[in-house]
Image (cartoon, rainbow, N blue to C red; front, side, top):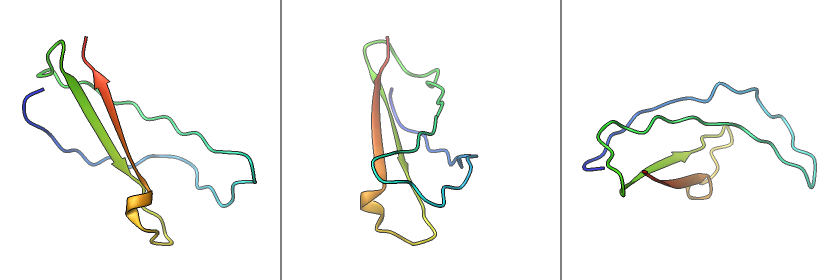
Amino acid sequence: MNGSSYRLYRLNCRPATAVPAHSGLRFEMVATVPETATAGGSVQISWKLQTAQSLPSEHLVGLLTIPVV
């Protein structure tokens, strides 16, 4: 993909008040590959979590690279 775009989305998920030890939570995100993406290239999706506790954001980020076929 040439260039980049930015969109802000908020997950519509239930609040998690506690996570028991040795367990986890799973949330699903769905993204649309831009029409300008070309085969053989890739699309990067990044996200960050914001918490009421204001935890350091460098620990709450993710980056996903998706190959375009």
